[in-house]
Length: 202
Image: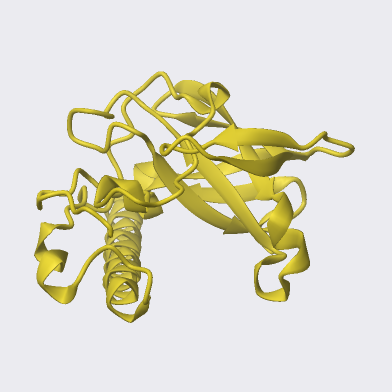
């Protein structure tokens, strides 16, 4: 009976891993296609082979505690080109990765509040100890929506972390992750450094 029990656990874990890997692969295919369809994209189809990613790893998909924040003042988040964008802190999330406690803020773009298609959009920028080595030095982003936060919890999947457009080209207003969103560990998940030549936007 014990053998059967452990066999079932092994099969279940293996099926989960295969399904998770397939989900991430599908997500990345869609991510690449967006570069071709977005008229503001810095990349063309010929550039897509230069997009590099860590292998899918469910260790970096965490169920975080989420504290919604109210009455937060708007602040100006700097961008890499010297501009600024107005944001508010929307939630504080706490979680553990590989035994290390972490915390991050999720933000909401003030100007998106007046755009119906973006009113539910949430922004999670972060830096970690892989930056400037295997990942973009300026940090990476994760997209969320207000509906993703349920019963004071939210799934944060670092396998979906992606580079700002500034990683591929100049001429874009990419927000700089605030210092409070610096993780003191290596997040070896999501997008790696772009291996192509950085472009110059006219």
